[in-house]
Length: 236
Image (cartoon, rainbow, N blue to C red; front, top):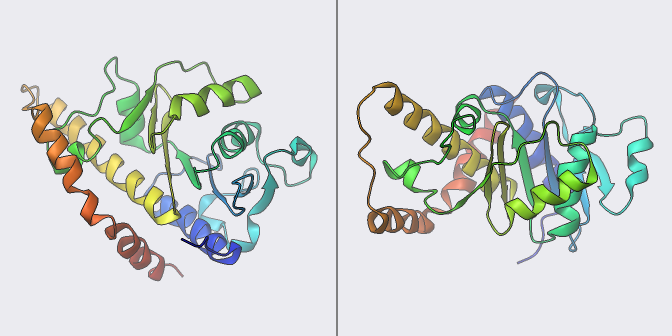
């Protein structure tokens, strides 16, 4: 499978930022998305410091080298937490091509609970059954090298990580795939929190049914491209 061109990745990643703003996933001018452009994963696109998601266009994205910390000295350097999280993941996990990190309201609210696990309750929640890393070691803003390494290890081979008391991180082979997981996880978190608010006991699926449902999503992987493609077409 050939890698997408840098131009295509710029277009897709910029669209993801603007769509995230449309869905209300942005937070002031913080948070960050990245996409690897080199085969070894070490050269990657990332948003510059404090540019609002809604305003990001393809040419605004920085091209950085995960092995070159001097990029933090430039006038358009990313913020420290962006470099810590994305630079480290792209350096240590070349197979992780795209990393989207933000604080969607419902996923973040779920991350604040003593039990932040997404329960298999329906198709959407069961999509993530046994497929989410949960980081329970929040220690403040992630802005030092050791924290970046810890988060990369916590993500491991998972594509989705719920960052306890923090937010959500979704990764994938393409911008569309990572964006689709973020879309579905946020919807699933919203549904679960609404179920919790009823005060009634949850009808949690048994493990076998939950796993069957999660596997049932696999033939629908192409939905991500179709969905993201449509969403891109609606952008000005």
